[in-house]
Image (cartoon, rainbow over all chains, first blue to last red; front, side):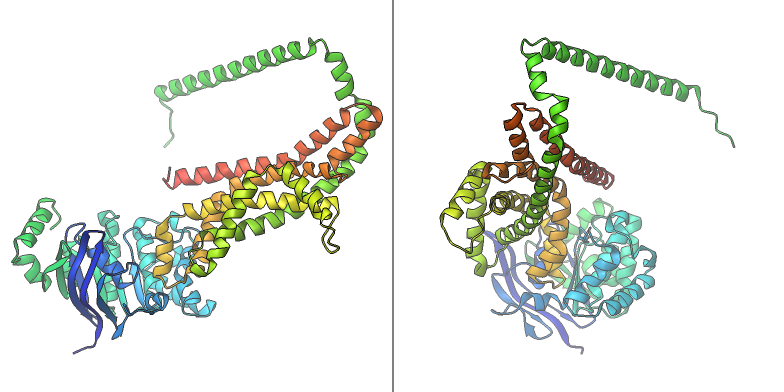
Length: 249
Length: 282
């Protein structure tokens, strides 16, 4: 039994009177990949943003590698430096080239020497066939390239957990494929990940477990096969039917 | 394979040429007409001869030129000195105003009050208050030269404008950029320095340069404190000859001084607009 990397206990979060997460509990073992599915507004993004402390929570606790990161007085920068986050809209820094984007956190958050950070970044870029983009600015890259760079930017510091929030939702099918194959490689390396996605085929491929979120609650969880093939709750059935009708399953 | 333009293409190109010839002719005619009307109105004015004599006199222009030019040298030094400090103070004030840290609250309050006051006060009033008020305090270590006090007034006023421009730039950077910076583990101030500020300054460079052009011409106002700049030098010449041509000489020199910066600003704005269109951000 490998150790628990992330543990979420009875997480509760509301925006005003709007309860977006109610009593969410789940955990992530080291090297485990969990995929969150659910309609827009089901709380997937809020859950991920609570984990890297970009969103304050109302109640509950989150443990990262056995440390309570929701404790009063915790340094959020310190916590975030151990978590990788990638967003739907890439959010690369447009004034920095690819190499500078990737080396920013190693250099200024982790205090790695510039040459070391650059060498490590180049190694990553080469591995994923992006080495000739190193000196380019994000605007000149395709969406798929931008998102792959954003993922490399998040993993170069070897985070304990990588959070991916609908990272392919802004991309067309060909570009989605290149981003997903990068994520599959990361899984092969043993990266611990929590992924929110609408790509069910991908969920099936990489997920150890799939969580179905509905109105801020985890209604079902299980292997991709059980969740996608034999849903139990009417909510999940309806969600899967809607996906099927849209040709996305 | 050789490409033979189709008749359709030739026809389109001919049509485009026709339109562009037509535009040129219209522009030329309208310019000539307006020019002629202006010439008739101005030269036909009853006092035209007198005005030409006292404002456009080549003799006085020549004799006044050296002293006005050496006055301009003072303006040039004042504007460069002021520009440097305005950019530094403007940046600091903008940072203070956009900071969120509670410990900086007094600073934020001070910066807000400062910009409110100095954006509202007419520059002429600031010049008179500082230029005449500070020496009146009779504190020995305070500067009392007209040039220094005039420069300080310019810095006081323009720092407030520039701070507001930079603040607008900081607030115009997409909040997702700040979030992305923080998500990487960068602290508040690191995010500000490496992520937000570089983007903000790029966004506001054209309006910033615009304020600097304005500062350049307003450096002529220090003449009210008695500093012998281009305008004051022209005034002295005029007082001797009762001919106003030296003022016109000073004016021409100021315009010549600001044109390079305005052209540069225009060029930069156009370049940024083009880049934005190419990236699809309208």
